[in-house]
Image (cartoon, rainbow, N blue to C red; front, side, top):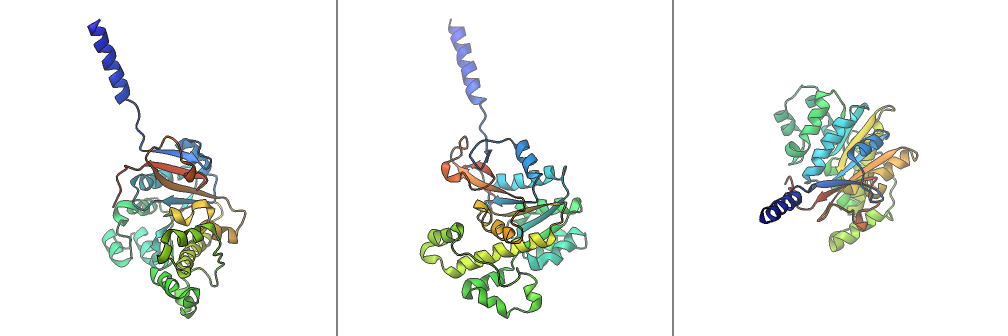
Length: 283
């Protein structure tokens, strides 16, 4: 009897320790769990996929690469990112064509401090597979001009400078919920000009997506989740160009428990990557 009880105890103990402890789970907009394969199948039918990340989330960065790699099996791709500013397109192209090495690219372009850990692999995927990679973000000096003086500050730019931003004047709706939320979240630190700077970034990224997307290719764009959540931000501007375009969004959220998507995270995007909040960050 003692041996049987001991054996049963060991079996139960092993069973408990063998239970899965997922680092993340995937959900659709309604909060229903979906498989990775199902998500890839849906993404492959889109025109533009906006992959909204938390900038330091290691699972999001890993999945950006995996999703890109797997979509390349069924679609011709163009890649683009918020993390490289439009006026660094020349340096990016030189790196993709092998005219400069990584060290020179790091020196010549204004890359984010986490480029090497979080984005270099995506750029190298484009290089290895001879894909276009588009630097979509507004140069930060121009975004700072809007932050300080509003859209009017950009009127003084030269024609050459204006090539790196969305055509002026841009449509702007200050009543969009996400823009209004910025004012709420930042409280006394928020200004109408800050919201306009955010809109100028969204408009510029949308502009370069539209300018560079080809009819039969799938454009994958990597950006902070705030730029595409709730189909606002970049998506809102894409719809100003083509309201009927098939734009599919992914977002990244963190929860203490990934088994069930919290109500607050439902409806945020077409697909939600729910990551354990204890996950190691990249910075």
